[in-house]
Image (cartoon, rainbow, N blue to C red):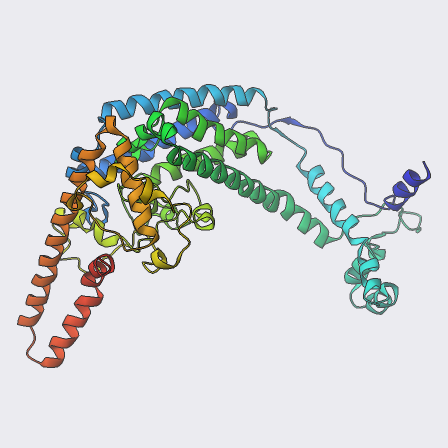
Length: 495
């Protein structure tokens, strides 16, 4: 009992908390309640952004930034667009039902308590200051003496050093005596305001992103590492060998619930978000997922530059040689990098040049190169081969596929193991036409490399005809080799 009284006495000088009265928070878009809007907005965002990219596709805008040609979309994908739309709608129905049930567990958002909550943070800041005299004593400094020296010139700093004892905050009462009701310093109120309105929400979003990235990485990786899980559930999503925006949520219904809906719900709860925070988190996650499957490496798309996990990074995961790499989604790539599952075969930009060739704009836009992935080709030889150490040995069906149908050839080392495991996984999906996909992609790669070499030779020949000096000849050839041709050599040099 005495210990409790002592603890109460220690905090008896804290400023009082203001009274408050709460009312229901007005909805963001009246008359739609926020909980209903939380269910509708991610769906609207999904189809809105998807249709924007579909419109760009059909109008053939920005062909120079395509990752794949329209012909690849129609020929390599093993599922119709109608089936994609059907399964996405099914997942969104499940998502809406789960979201409605989740909303029933959440209280309605209220307003009117904000000033009180800021004051609570100001109190916490004041309580934290009580430790300052003890910390100074540990290093041999006298807090009382320092505060006395500073009191005249820096009274606020002196009060903080004294453990939050601000004599200047004791205003006189009407009869001239000191008012026993203490107040908060301006800096305490400013910091408390920042904590409540900015720091804590940012931490909540950070926790939610960490949780959803962790959930999706390990579950997604498990679905690739376990043959039964892949062929039973996840192979459906990968029948979109050439992703497009509104196929982002094309999944087996059970996988869609487990990977996306349940993962986002757990992240929402773990971060202790309110309804409106959840609305922005769910909508933002949806936009990021659509953008990751859009099929374009757009240099001015902010979602593709906020993190290295973007459309190019995820598209590698959809290729026959990279399907067992780049598991991270939807926000960051740290789990891939920490656990050695990032693609290690070097920059693959040249492998996507066939899209620009088909758009007939590659030659004219020789220097408008978009980097697809930033992996270093040297990583293949230097990185620990785990978790792919046994992938080549276990790729028993791959031995029956001719070398010409295993293109492009990755550099020796870890990338070779990653590609072997990825191609074996394609072969595991017999119902999805895996063997045919391997052969078709290999033929496309061979044709693209031939076209690229011809384009490079044409540019060099054109350069030769426009210069008369040996120095000009040398400069133009060097420039060509460090430009487009350099990108080609980046994936060819180790073969």
